[in-house]
Image (tube, rainbow, N blue to C red):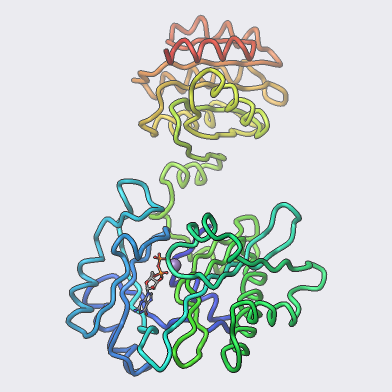
Length: 396
Ligand code: GDP
Ligand code: MN
């Protein structure tokens, strides 16, 4: 589950990470009040207005802007709220902005220029260890740094048995070129950031930029946080942080009816029981010249109701040009699934795309008969290859 920047920052702050202070607002009037309140706390009249959407690169898309007084806060917040923000990380249509974060300007001029660093904590899946990735080249374009100057990105691996050790946070501060007070503050920042990551059961904490201000504060200016869905049961309070407006609507609906659905870009919808078979089916679709439109595991109890719910979901995706149903009748009987398909087809009504059904296992022959005699425009297959050929035929 992804969080908004302001939510991520609240979690960071609760673990003692210093953050750029801010207040979230859903209208220009709220933004002005937020700015007034922040000025009381921080003393600065300058604020940055930041679109809150689940996508990075907001600065490049015009979703992060500086306001030097309350009039500018009102105008800019009004412009950003309701806009369709297009960034390198959104689709071409962009994302609708429902709220902005009004935050203190922490780039205030001083004796020295503020420095922007990059820092993230994530799981290195290759060795099953958490690691901290960091770089002196923070700011907007870490992907470019990784591509062009990978030697400027450092990593610190953490032994799960002992956790992050003090010498490691010192090494990070040292590699970032810090000394004196900034060095000390950075070691504290790293320790607190790592605790926040561990205690919140996150799979990603990305802070870009981490800022060293002209007066040597070390501050999280941005926060991209992904919580581990499998650990959410341990954090009931985080459930309230979910913003379903940011999630794929078909996936949200699938979750509500207990189906395991992942939206993909292709044109062949697939309905399968079992995750392994679903992966194999996606390969099959690719071999037949198609691209899977989704991953959908209907699970072991593929009864008529679930089959119908699954059909409804797949049909919501306008890119779907054909549907391949691939069910192995082990626990579930194929004829029950076939009946479910026929019923769903009739209930849904105007299905205009070809459907290929492959049922294998218990009562597969009865199931095939059921489908063939249903009078519906559904093609049945028993062999994997046969199904692939039929998919290929309808796509060409
Ligand atoms: P992102 O573009 O989605 O990664 O959003 P960020 O929160 O990282 O903001 C984008 C950029 O805006 C940062 O890299 C900074 O250069 C700039 N920025 C953010 N906060 C401030 C601020 O308080 N003052 C100024 N002057 N610039 C800021
Ligand atoms: Mn950023």
